[in-house]
Length: 209
Image (tube, rainbow, N blue to C red):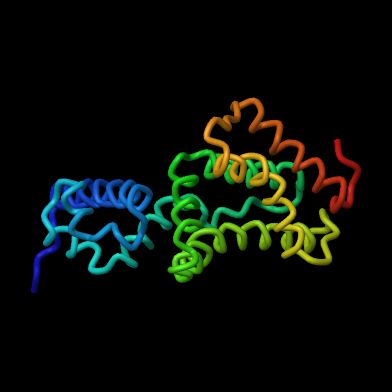
């Protein structure tokens, strides 16, 4: 029976994993997904190929890790409690804005868009492993608010798309094509607050405070 790794070895493994994921993201952007070999990733990360292959046996597994790390906070389990549509949507909206404001998120979308014609599987992985779980958390939250009587939402899927779209259309998509696009923290807060007010006005069952 193989003994469990010590806390020290676990920490070292996590540190090397982070170095590998960071190096892969950089190389995917610089060279494209196809040309960025695992050997080059290992060299950039400063680890042996054996270490890299132990954690990521394929390039697809490495891309999955990048997606998972980028969307690390998007857990369905973190759905806010029902009963206050404004408060719940504000929590979800601010969490989403924080995710989209990470430089790694813009980098991830650029990789997916650049490689979509040759590697459509990257886009599917990005959506199913990253965006879909977060989208589901918003949809599930809207369903719970409908069941609690705090929202009149006939199509939670459409409503979740509307809410996330109002935020991402300002915070994320311009940054993909405008290198100098910046959004201040105050502006980010305003974007989320406006999206929440729009949703409450459209779907709330009680007059907004």
